Amino acid sequence: MRQRNLPLWTGVFFIAIVAVPTIISLFCTPFDPVVMDLDVRFQPPSSSNWFGTDQYGRDLFSRVMAGGQTSLAISAAAVGIGMAIGGTLGGFAGYYGKRWDELLMRLAEAFLAFPSILLALLAVTIVGPGKATVLAAIAIANIPVFMKITRASFLQQSKFEYVLAAQALGASDWRIMARHILPNSLRMILVQASASFAGALLAEASLSYLGLGVQPPEPSWGRMLREAQFYGGRAPWTVAFPGIAIALVVLGFNLVADGLRIKGK
Amino acid sequence: MRYVTEKIVSFAITLLLVSTVTFFGVNVLPSDPAMLILGTEGDPERLESLRQELGLDRHVLARFVRWLRGMLSGDMGRSIRYSVEIAPLIRNALPVTLLLAVSAVGLALLISIPLGIGCAVRQGSFLETASLLLSQLGMALPSFWLGLLLINLFALRLGWLPPAGFTSGYSLILPALALAVPRAAVLTRIVRGSMLDALSQDYIRTARSKGLPRQMVLYKHALKNAAVSIASVAGVHLTQLLGGTIVIEQVFSLPGLGQLLLAAALQRDLPLVQGLVVTSAALILLVNFGIDLVLMGLDPRLRYE
Image (cartoon, rainbow over all chains, first blue to last red; front, side, top):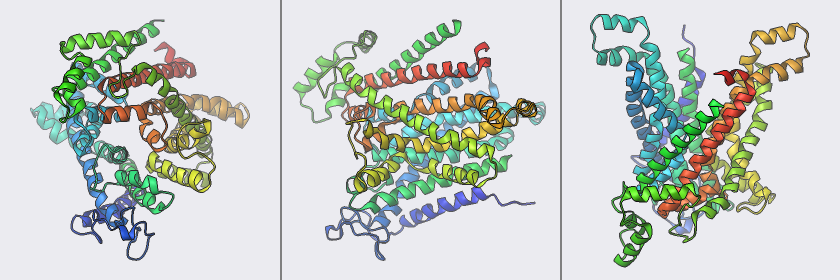
């Protein structure tokens, strides 16, 4: 019997509302997102400029579309890297246990207690602001998160009989981890990946808002909000739309995480 | 007693670890800190004088020991950009951040505890559905965007509250609200979950069947047991906020630790960055310790572990 998973599909829908225009923007946008035209500054939303224009007369709809490219790409890359490194370390810790496990988990705990924005600012101090800095900081912050979740799942799975059976058959540790345990742990890891993506997007937007991430004129949602801040009273749409885009994606990924979790039960 | 000693030792070790990582991160990773500070356009004389000021002619380990000694006696060195002692800079900024973080978490608890209890007591009601939907939405709103919207509405349009700066307690209302909403969203779910958990326990049935008034069962028995998980999650939010008010401080131009750190990081004021990161870490560790004590107060079982 198949039941519709409402949170999952609502989440996918919200993500698609933003992701599809973002993908289209790779090929074309209604207007050029970076070319300025001071004659049409602060136009309210209309039939030609759906989201209005900003302080330089740039079409906001095109900018929101294109801004998704960097925001989504950085979040995806950061979560991917965090998942790959954290998942591998956590997998080993959970499967082999003992001293490795103890040491890695202590490190992870210490790391998690530390707000990741401090880490990002430390990185900015050393290598300066930019996309790579932001990506690295978010990725590093995600490593201990995936370490913990993968470790817990691998530890639990490695006690099951199917693992003992595989060991008895003489399967190598690698094979057991990759072919037997990983598929069973995958759902938990995906739930975390979805939740982490929402967090990463918020982090990227915050850091760009602070001027630490994407540099102008390249559009990014956080950066657009920073610029819009000074004109919010005059042109509230410049504040509204980039924020709505962020909120929709974050909401979407949180819902997907919830949906995957329900399905897992 | 043993617990306290253990805690103090682990506190010292963690702080030493953070200090070490921070110091070597900014002093060893870049090949020349003076060059990092001035950038490539710094002229040779200024570069030389800055090297003198930072004591770069000495070995990095010697500098580290000297810096640690200074920190222990409360001397954090001098800021390069502001040319003043770092300790007073931090002392002035600290209360703003502390007050903001505490009021944000307080506000979040004030919103989420009644809502969460309401949801748990009236399962399947309109209140529950609405709260859960709203909390899903609240979790998705970026704090700084919410801050911008609040400024727009309450400061620019209605003129009720100041849009920026720190002049009086009123200045903290909007920033605290912006920080509190996403946290209240998370906490409402925690309160609901832990209340449902507590209400399904045997002792609740016992309490009910012996005829205790509903309110008493709810608040004295259930809430007291749910309080442990609520307090620990609230504690995590508080520690995250101690380092994480940076963005909101920027939105509302509040002169807190975050503003100081952001400026220091962008201007590469290395001594100031070091001092701020270590101060934040110490604060976080202290708050964690405080939360442990609160949790032990709430749950006697934890005292014997």
